Amino acid sequence: MSAETERATTTARRFELDALRALVVLGLVFFHSALVFDPDDDFYVKNADTTPAVTVLAGFGVVWAMPMLFLVAGLGARHSIRRRGPRGFARERLLRLGVPLVLATVLLCPVPQWLRLRAADPGYHESYWHFWPRFLTVHLDLGDFPFVLDGKYFETGHLWFVVLLLAFCLLLAPVAGPVAAGAERTARAVERRPALLLLPALPLAAINALLGMEEGFAGWNRWAYLLFFVFGYALADDARVRAALRSLVVPVGVAGLLLFAATAPGFMAEDDPFTAWTPLAVGSRVLFSVAGWCWVAAILGLLDRWERTRLAPGPLLGYLAVAALPLYVLHQPVVVAFAYGVVGWSAPIPVKYAAIVAGSLLVILVVYEYGVRRTRVTRFLFGMRP
Image (spheres, rainbow, N blue to C red):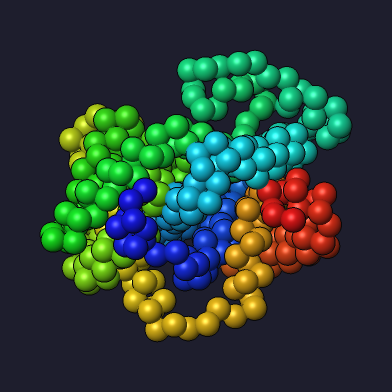
């Protein structure tokens, strides 16, 4: 990396992005709890009564939240490669992502699948320990890369994010130098013409429109996330790009809201908007993709404006920043377990929803504090630094 690039790239920790990452991870508890009451989503446990309001509200999250997590992860990859080099980065990510991925796949992912079977069939009484080896009966399936294991009951569940992130990191390591060199030329062009930051919306739209959107991956095609990750690595922390993002906050934010609203007819139509080839479905995928990029760009610029006020991070932010990965790994089995116990209550939807959210947040924070954070072994198993 050139000295000019080093000067243009910010090296201070981005506390505003720590806050955003923690917000998204905790927000997943609210999001997945809401899917229990969504009439369209095939969540593990479903309430007898549902409401279409959940579908609308969920859309406001999927359009930007997971893309932002991948972008922030790409930014972290830039700093890690600068410190460790590509080989050291690949080794570090194999440990920090691979170890919790294997642990959670073996011990946590079977729980939601087992509860799905129990919720769907009142006559199903197989014990968890009898179901567990059946869940782990797998075979190789290279056609669904990077999800190379398949089985009748096996799934990666919410760990799809970790699988994709690990794959992206390993794909990036061999080409990290050329990508960084190309980023320098791009940043100089963006400095002269900030509107160039709208161009990534085009390949995003092409991927979602042509390859289809994947409901199991929070609505985006898996390879669209790679573009967010690469942008985070190559450009998101460049001082020139950050200045351009700050200047575009208002027009790009307004455009994102209008474009997202324009997707409503397509996502409410009878044809599947995620995969159908009707003009309305394809157009909706294009609008969703461009809206998502606009939302991400506007949020980055807005947070950078906030960060420049030099507000000091509080202790809660510092606590949650390092807890993001363990909390992500823990959250979904806990949410599904609470939902399984709550949906049978004779209570209105708001009461059930509040109970699932409150109980799940309490359990994952307690398990993190007393079962993960305090020992070296458990920190290592959940991808935390010593």
